[in-house]
Image (cartoon, rainbow, N blue to C red; front, side, top):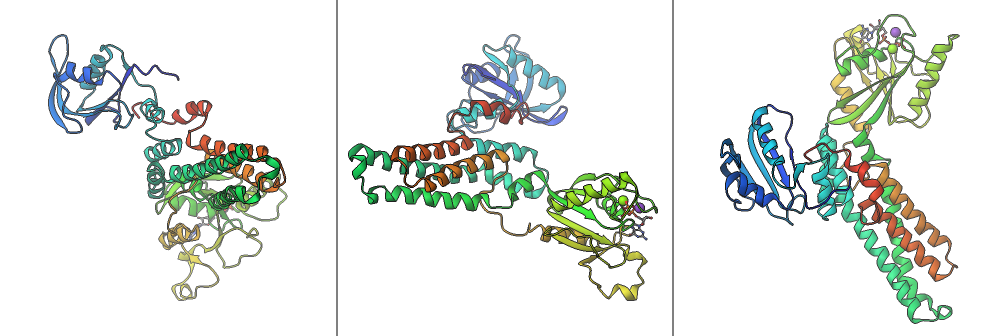
Length: 442
Ligand SMILES: Nc1nc2c(ncn2[C@@H]2O[C@H](COP(=O)(O)OP(=O)(O)OP(=O)(O)O)[C@@H](O)[C@H]2O)c(=O)[nH]1
Ligand SMILES: [K+]
Ligand SMILES: [Mg+2]
């Protein structure tokens, strides 16, 4: 996807027609010419102007709408940009797009091309662009909050600061190399550089040690339902998703495979997994299902251990965060309901009683209530880059006795690994993957 920058690109940036209002976005060197052609002038920068749009050849009225002009370089893409806010009918949009396509060196934008131009013109780094993609895709409130912070440069600021400090440390070392015979370089000339690198390494390690919180906000936390046959696991899953996603029968051993559903639980993206009831059995199919249930529970963010009789023997895998859920509360007479038993929560999938309590408890158990740090890793790509950078710094610490040139090279590699995360360094191979996430018009 290499584009010539003398093209002016355009696209419908709002959703599918028909809609009340449609937004057509233009970017490139021909934007001023395009506006003069369509409305006879270039309106005042960043002010909405109500104008009649006309076909250049015939003078026919295409539509009347709001026209906005954002001169480069202080625009989204860094180029001249315009937005045409017109009526969202199919014919209006079609005639405008056709008119634009007829202008010299105008063409339809490819998916993500506006954002790509923004990156190439230095208007946003890769982490901000990933934040933007997440913001467009955000489905839950937590995802939206995380994406806004990232799109606003939360990660960029942190990573640029580290990179700047590593580059400075290397400069200190190289300056020392230039002026002093290596044998004689006194330790204290280099000491501030080593100190700086060690500080950055500590900060990176802390940043990486986040239990993958940002990735899980983005991709969803995994919550696994576990318990003996007929505990009511599938019934609870169905009640939470409000549809018959899993088969429920009175027969113990109904569920064999893992059943996954994605849902928004109180503003948090969760993948809820129903599993086979745990028991000794001769059935090979069921045994495999039970083995899968245990494996999945072992890797879960949270296990909901279900029981309809307040006993919790052997259900719980070591180490997993867990809530004990007493099911079928509607079968319990109202006097016994008052004695809480050993469960964290009691509920009925049949009547819905206690479900809201469960949703709140899940949020608390996942520790979602804590304040979100300004910069959270949201993707494996970022984690890999920071880990690689930290590896180089660790090597630097281990190789304390090595030649100064080797150490300077390790600092350079550490800074480059960071630069690849933000897109400052040699990322051509990554770009197509990242921009493919965007739709046309973004
Ligand atoms: N009264 C009442 N019955 C329930 C409730 N939840 C589940 N049941 C019944 O309990 C039986 C088992 O429910 P399931 O949801 O299939 O239980 P499960 O844990 O998925 O069972 P397996 O898949 O066999 O391990 C069914 O007959 C359900 O109708 C409830 O809240 N109240
Ligand atoms: K069952
Ligand atoms: Mg089941």
